Image 1 (cartoon, one colour):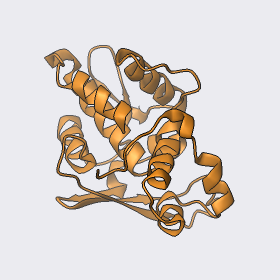
Image 2 (cartoon, one colour):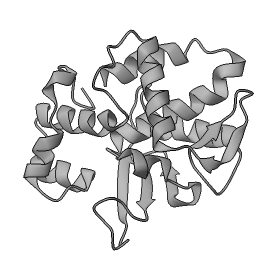
Image 3 (cartoon, helix red, strand yellow):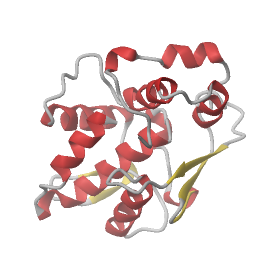
Image 4 (cartoon, helix red, strand yellow):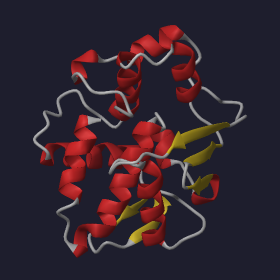
Amino acid sequence: ESQIRAMHKRWEQSTAYEERIDFRDKALFLVGYFGAFRGSELVGLNIENVYTNRSKLVIELKKSKTDQAGKGASVQIPSRLDELCPVKALEEWQRSLRRREGALFPGINRHGKAGLTPMTTRSLSRVFLKRLERTGTNTAGISSHSLRAGYITDALEGGMSDAVILKHTRLSSVDMLKRYYRPQTGKLKLLGS
């Protein structure tokens, strides 16, 4: 969460030219972190699978790495009362995008125009690392997967129960959960503290 807060400070200093990319990236990282998404899940989201109200986001995953049968899952992300609210960030991004269907997080060209196809996981990692580098963060060993690992690490260090974390992250076992625990990412505060 501390790295996301540092990126937020940079977003506040955006020029109009950078604003659209900033809207996307802020929503991308906040939804990715608070939803504990894998990179492939995050870039694979479509607008028509996301529902919002002021209290939460509900995101319908059609399939994921551990759901090869395609049963899907519903991921709920509560809103927050601070600048890191994923609900507000996603609503701002969707207003900027001006679409009702298609890729939620498309690539954006150098002129600020959003494409029709989703960004790739490789692009997601490049954008994430570039944003972190701008905050002065050492990016060695960090990738877009760090959003998911960071959420799990923060939740474990904050005392959230394994059962609650497993349900939210869509992991199947405590052993898998422990693989995501990365205390070397720093002492981060629990989501709402």
